[in-house]
Length: 300
Ligand code: DGJ
Image (cartoon, rainbow, N blue to C red; front, side, top):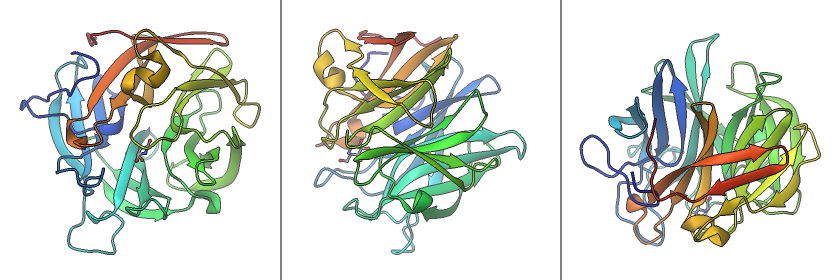
């Protein structure tokens, strides 16, 4: 697949899994993301729901449909087409055999800034919307989910304080609520699009700056513990277009064959449904991280 382009599913249609994530569950990859399959007006599209695709090889993607539906019937519902549902992320809860989704739930003007939660019994849904909330009474804009492999604790990692601070809001063991434990990171750095990774005693965050759909410089940060000490390090990108993340923005870090890879969105602000994707391998050694551009993603 050619990195940076619009990728097609098994029906030959553009994959609608923007701001998404890839979950490996029982040998199958599931790609969740924003369905933006509608005309773009004023740099936004109506809320269409969350799509899911499945794959064995990360190259051919089977369309599994919309797994969290919009609610055109109820204008006050957080999933009404007039609202915003972005960056959906899913964790599997093996104790309750449930898939828990969190996403950025907002009003079209991004003033509401809530976290939405939904749950399903199967990876391909349907996900049932449980509600939206302000995690620990804070705003939630760009976000991701991260399960700490050391403690097993999961976190909603969200830009808060009008994007000034990145917060790690600890989730309860069933992932459905918050414990009240919350760690701030990178105060006043105005980072968004967080993608997290852990390796050999260090936690890494790749983030973007806040320039809407326009690409800017990715930066990575590192800390030995999630509770404090997250330091901005450098731009991890190398190759053509490295100053502006190859024209893309971070979305999620996941493992392929034991090696971290990053999923990027190449937004097309004038035609969001045709936005492209890249998957790039990452080199991480201690305090060093590199994401080198590659024209092709070959899958597994
Ligand atoms: C940048 C964010 O990273 C995206 O998820 C989206 O919210 C756009 N801003 C909207 O302009």
